Length: 126
Image 1 (spheres, rainbow, N blue to C red):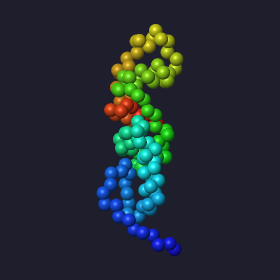
Image 2: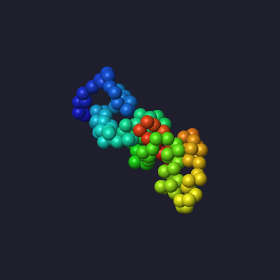
Image 3: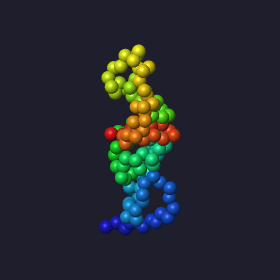
Image 4: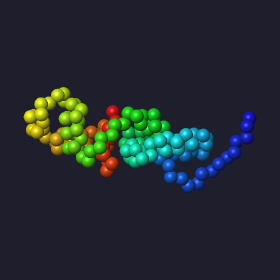
């Protein structure tokens, strides 16, 4: 058996927990994942996303590609995007779209656990 050197990390600021038995290669792999996400909307809100939907950093990493980012500021804007651009209710004629209450539907979306509203935008995960 090879001799393993023990390393103690006393102070750190990482979006994942360190454990005393965690091998250095695993810490490095997690740090590489963090660096990959750095500067992206998901990376900027990593902590909030992880707290909302995932019980661990590893689970977050496993599902990060399933998280949708919407560059909108509030529920009404998300509602309008989902209805007009993604056709969540099917194709709605343009002349009817101006009669839709986006604020009301947006309020429902804000209470929906599938969406996370942040200062960076809105994230969706099903």
